[in-house]
Length: 239
Ligand code: OAD
Image (cartoon, protein in one colour):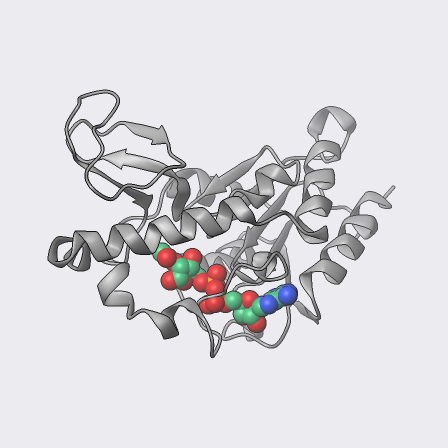
């Protein structure tokens, strides 16, 4: 792992699995319990807003009850130590997860491309608010007073957040690491090829081979709580 300066890390549901949060595509996963079209599309929300608000109320409560695991904590350490002013380089953690476990694990340079469970978005005035309570029964937007708050989540058919910033970071990356994501959902699933085109070394950490494994220079199989701390040690041992 020598001559690495700029690092982009993509995380998915697998990094939070050991914190007790369900992944999406496992046999007992979230999409097994709830059809995607019902709870993760604008059309589903229009059809049955109460069902969708209830689904995200549950997600919010589970996120608040969960704690970061060793993988989140290791990335928090990497984030505090891997800085240009320390003769390292840039780092960006792009997460598809809507939990705040990276932040609670100490990471600061985190971008939530699929939104956040603990945020509400007003579709009238476009404001976003930190939100920990229920969104059922139409609470008023603290800014405009309208009862038009929805979960601040990117649903299927909507544009993920901050794509320009992500592609800029990928274009400058020397190392791209994908952790605990199945490679089933684009555009995130395409980041590995984007990084490889820009000359980055690409590394996947996953419990098992994923749909995208063939695109990576290297895949390490195991639990995130083992593999991520080991990778961080390896990186920080770099001269
Ligand atoms: P998935 O449920 O599709 O994939 C989870 C991945 O984590 C799988 O590849 C597992 O093998 C791996 N995994 C499970 N436990 C692990 C562990 N302890 N250590 C390491 N890896 C582990 O979840 P995502 O890839 O995150 O989008 O799903 C991507 C997007 O699909 C989500 O952000 C969500 C969903 O639809 C939206 O809601 C917009």
